Image (cartoon, rainbow, N blue to C red; front, side, top):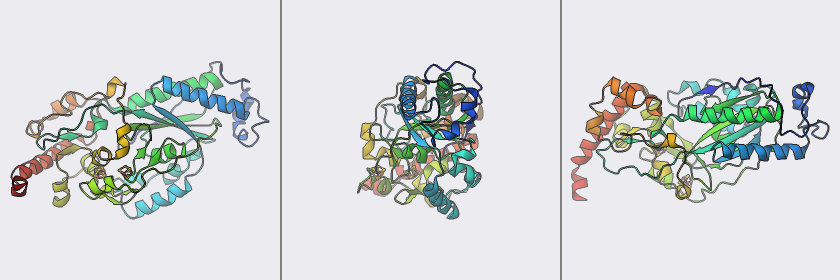
Length: 370
Ligand code: SF4
Ligand code: SF4
């Protein structure tokens, strides 16, 4: 439910390969699709070389600041496609009609990158060791939006990784994606062994929890796929039990119509039903409840990316101050920030709802008795 963004990786590097054990001849690049079928016949594409390249790629991803890197085979997401289709047919995507478009591209990476053989998934931690203030008079902004917009930062690193790949191989056909509309980033990350999709639908990683961004390179380079990991949610239902709006209607499925992240970011009109608005509490951009309560997030650790540190005003500004915000200050304060996504009107609607809820809570006689 973050803004969609697609970045073409339109390089045509002529740099000399330095990693590949046999430099691919020009014709090899065009015949690369044969490599997975006849790996031993293709110069430079034997399995050992693929494995060494994958290891070196992961080391380079780590050097660039990514926290985890996994590889999956670029093939149709048949099982995920069935679930996505059902979810769309039931209207669980609310007003996000863009999710209905490009269905074929969404489920088949070769429709996005002709000849694609591998999907490289990357995770980038954004956790900072600060907690949400529990004062209902403070407007709460989702953690991922405390710092700079992640799209450009992630894309810059993905492009650097792509360039590194071209330095090893010569020209590579591929694209970089960060939270892009036609790519099922969580599904690819799960396939590549970087975690599993928890009952709240976010990806969970055993070493990091869930506070990370996901990006991908879809490329025409055959690489050995990593094995998926099992689901470690077990009998836990904390995310379902704590969701303020009952948006997780069944394990592993979120109804955007009820999700505060959708309502505060993607929903563009003032027609949020009163019962839902009342359950939105003091969230003015996004919602972290299902991730905050997840036991796997005890494995979180602080990011070393300075761009994700909280900006002034993002974690402790009172709602009565937010309600005075004007357009010019909004633009200045949230320049290059994800908080721009709902635009000024949407953000101020959220502030008004949160303020209403805070006043209600302050005068709640049951709260006084408790
Ligand atoms: S983001 Fe908030 S509203 Fe949405 S599913 Fe998670 S807890 Fe529920
Ligand atoms: S809170 Fe529990 S059920 Fe939900 S994602 Fe985390 S481990 Fe899974």
